[in-house]
Length: 211
Image (cartoon, rainbow, N blue to C red; front, side, top):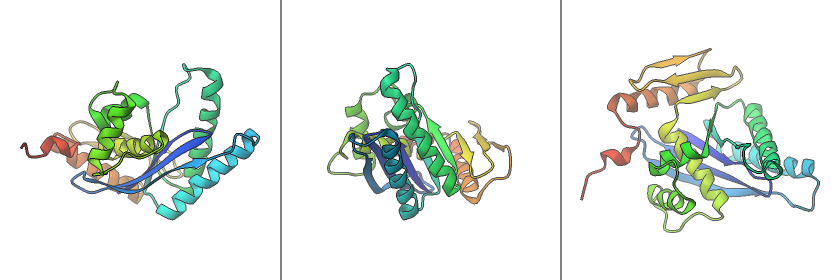
């Protein structure tokens, strides 16, 4: 399964793509940032970010997109543009007819490091380790987008899908329930999640041999 992760931001919007196999091994496909100029009016900046996301979807053909949720309890002035980017990102995912998942920052940190309060350095270190990278992805927005994609690859429990907004839930016992008809990508995702949950783990590191 190929997952595109998006870390919303108006100046730099992180875009990372990974592939995950049935054993939950994750491989890096691409990573970068979509940029917009502070000299432009906001609606033109949003246009540029949206175009970059659309180009990434066309180029890398993900089966699902994961986006980090913006928290409004932060400074409203800084959160509003980020929320706007999240909106245009979701619109591009909808335009492409792809299923989508949304995660909080703590969910992303917990999935990647096992600690929902991990700092950025810990998250970046684990991303490099999981993807067997010799250098940390830069800037931080790029690394965050990979963390979001990995979060969905390992920990996804809900998926907003295709054109019907159907919701899929996979219980801890591996039972799949859905509202609406599943797309092929949704079905693959749900079956993989159920299989791993029946084994009792999603993160393959838990089954790694000990030295």
